[in-house]
Image (cartoon, rainbow, N blue to C red; front, top):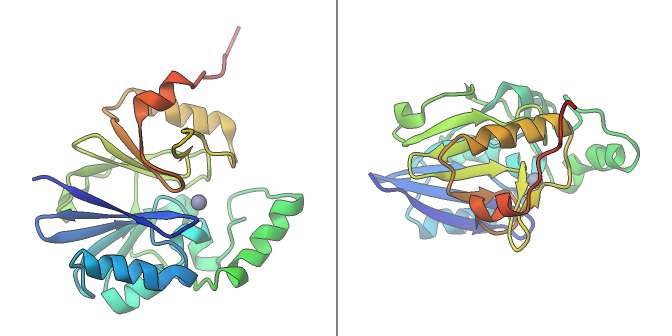
Length: 224
Ligand SMILES: [Zn+2]
């Protein structure tokens, strides 16, 4: 059962469409202002309304969740995400579960308006270790907090990791510059190192080999 991955580049953020056995799974949904581009990419891949099995949301930031309400209504898609970020989706507030200050607080306040965000409730709450083969996708859910408390990674059986905003993409793969809980982000990375991660598909920037990231990554020293 091989998976076909299509990158949907929406300019400031990526979504990914996975085709598997005539079923479609979307990773993240982008933002409403680029909905036409998203729909065009779905259509081009042969994914029509009614044909999207699941939208798996890596975290609650509004540039990733902006088309979820639309996908529920027009595609009949079930939206799956971690409970830690569900409040962001329900309230349209990226500050839920975080402690934004200064400029960031202002950006969070304005984002729902600037991005024309519509709130929604997830249909499925994902947990660490969930096996997505129950939905027809050979992949597993890993809770990877750091960028936000409800961030998850989706790791396929072939070693493709959809990491959301834990890592930033090529040309310079790195830890994302927004990290709410640095210690948790590094713990999430330590966990990823124990798994079979080959190619990383980030929320922003291009895909890269996990090895390439690790070559330039120094875990923080702990203890003494
Ligand atoms: Zn993002």
